[in-house]
Image (cartoon, rainbow, N blue to C red; front, side, top):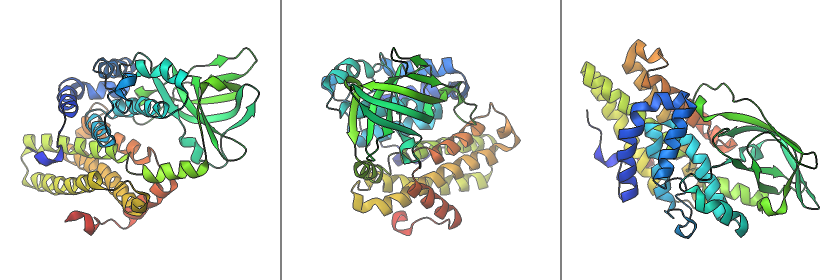
Length: 372
């Protein structure tokens, strides 16, 4: 069964090429990529071979310099075909975007020309900045900033050579710096210790670890930026819809599986379910892509984010239902997408997103203003 053609308006050569590549090369091995680090590594390098790993980095630095909407549509596409690949490459894309905005030209020259093709792979970790009390703190020292504490989650161990970590300063500002992504001892005695990869329900192959910092000094030449709490809060409000791309892609993956089940079983009620979810996903997607990023639109955008999360879970659940008992197999696509919906529910979650998601789950209804 074919879905609405308007759901994926591929309006650039990048997106057209990406869709064709992901459908042909990634989709057939998505279950393996979810669990096998070597398969995931190969898939990541395939993106690098096409210079797709630094999309927001300017062409002068070796990236593609695409606009924000193109990046988010690319992220949606990758999530449709492999949640693990989408999540891993997103860490690297975020690192490239953050580094490109830095005033540290020496660090930019060292990393950015290599990032688009995956010759240098960099992760990020700053979601913990929202935690109270801050698990990782920093103080200024003579030659940089000393970090002490723990980062609960860092994805990409064994894939990324370095990652950008953020720590809270005594005045509430956050300092962002480049650090090695491996257990390391500095000459002065500072240490970074990485745990073994966690056993996660979804995307195990992405290798998420805990890192502990003990008197680790980030030298001044490895500092990317220092950011105020106000600027961090503004960023969270402006970017509230950014993670929606992954939920939309996951929802589409669920409908793909539902369509396959219908083609095999031909139950009319399946066709009705596909049509209803397809219409709702189209409405949600169109509303998200046309939404303003202005902070005044934050409340409305928050509802859209919650709607996308809700749809990802419901479409994945529909895939499980239509696949019957087979969906309980770890090797079944519905099982993988259902677990990916869990991951994309909490990925990039702020307190506001948590509240909006729970409110929607307890008062489930489609926002009338977005249905049309």
